Length: 382
Picture 1 (cartoon, rainbow, N blue to C red):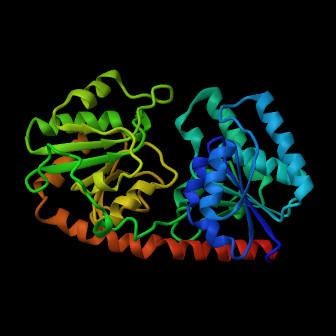
Picture 2 (cartoon, one colour):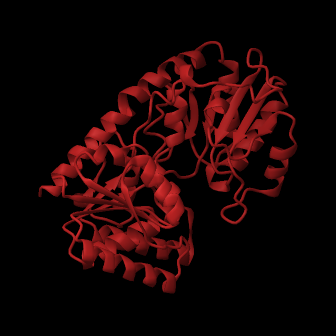
Picture 3 (cartoon, rainbow, N blue to C red):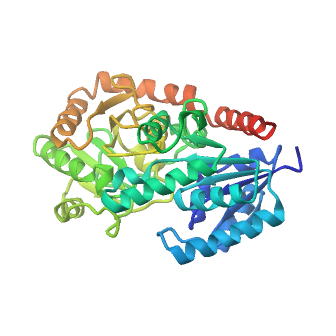
């Protein structure tokens, strides 16, 4: 078993490998782990942190026939030379290239991990092209691991992959959650929100990319309406604006930057202090593969408002550890946020008390790692 090789494949930015932080080191007890990605310096840093070998193959995230062909050739040469036992593909471009090369070079175990369905946020020719890429990745794999049951259901319903190839490990997620890191007792809050009175104010929080598909337009309009009723409410926003991909409305950005009760802190390396200053976490997203940030909020004893979509409605149970509402509905989002404010001393506190225990039971990191290790051993022994 020590001589077996397991390759994790990601796309251009090695930051995608951090979806598996700690897991590669854990799996290296059974497999000879090699992390493959672009950007050699960032990749080597990740390899040093995990204690695994790395190999750099340049890849570009946008679709580019010439660049993608060059990358595919590099994969083919590398796989033919090293003869891996297992190839594990992640992210759309990384999976497409690695699964295709692995099949063409006769790799026996080809695992595609589907973290989400990018085509769901597109239309027309681009959607058709992205669906085709998903079909090829699934076809070239021997097993498709889905991060949520919703992703699995969509792949079947959309005719992307046959059900017999699809699996969800445990309750979903790619890496579980580090319950020591995401423990309110271990978070130092240096009060970065100087104009928020945690004892008197009621604070909502959003963490994620500031884009349309995260439901940011609806969130800002709902909050603005709510702030007209209550003066002691706040909205903390952490994340980067992405103007080139799925941007929010200009009026939404203006409100984020100028509304006195909206506190925007940009992208942060550590989001925990900001989350711990809040009473409710809000993720009104249109689509998610798996809402990792909802796990993080729950582990920090924070109830959540999220939408009835795959990857979110499996983590949050309506009325138990939060509320689940329809996506794209500003009015229902407003009514739900108002409900949380009106019930802040009763049912909301009960939801907060249940939040961490539910995450602990379903997504504790070492349990998730053990489940993946068992699956990889099984697949490699077939």
